[in-house]
Length: 377
Image 1 (tube, helix red, strand yellow):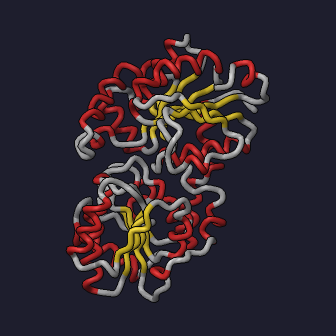
Image 2 (cartoon, helix red, strand yellow):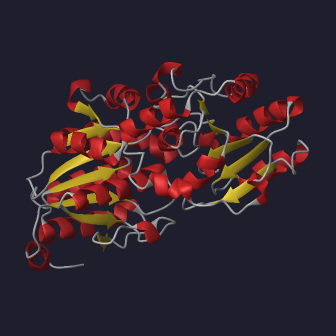
Image 3 (cartoon, rainbow, N blue to C red):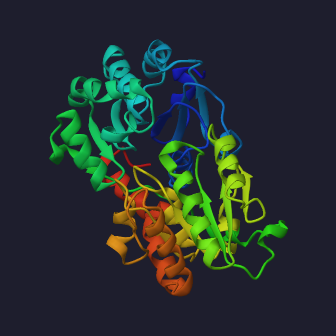
């Protein structure tokens, strides 16, 4: 870790972005997008990680300083975070995700409050413990009741998340700022233009694409069942980008439905945009979300979209159905019908692109800086 004097010798205000690791999640990817835009504007950026691991490590922008807290568990990051804040004194820290938000606020207090700390909630507090099977996440609302009043600011990635956070954590809704994710990166067009070297996409049949962690939250079991109904009525293919613990049971579901030749698991893809551009339809089948970053990427690529009307985010992105159908969560037949209807009557590509670009890094970081107000670079 660089010393305080080494950091202070560099020009420009310092913004620290704190998250657990660079695993293949939406919050992690969005931090990289924000970091890149902040660098472009002349800010210094520290990426403060509990563990320097994950699929997105290779995508950290040049110029970002990685701070490794070397903490295998969140609780172990408290003292290293206190040390970092005392030595480095960043002008601002933006933290992400429940327990890491708690550590950031407490560490700043123990360090003597050298930094303004903003915490960000990315997911639905009401659902994340009950629907993910991670009972420990149920403690987050209790911790939030204690630490949120000590934060310099509280951020949520959608209005629904802000409403839920206020209710569950007992925190005033008017003190929660809604800042959507910068989910349409500036290099998206170049990424989308890259070729896809996969014969699965070389077909006259429509290709349905899904992207996300292979986790119960993402509802891929519902999507596969709905796709089976769709494929029984018309030729179609389904490609799924992502990795996770449910890969084996999802592949078993595909096999049991006799869809081996129509469904392909692509694994983790560093550049999903090239697949979005080639797909005829993108589907988000989640049971709950915080925002729905990949939904914005699909729109910005001009790809027709369908999303479950899950809490929270997709209905805000799609403006309650204006930019894509919103069937109910876990309704297999409704999802199959929405996919068929969208394939038959896709919205104009430019309409979708224009909506997606409302979430560009430039526009979103403008909103961030208006709220967090670091010193000018």
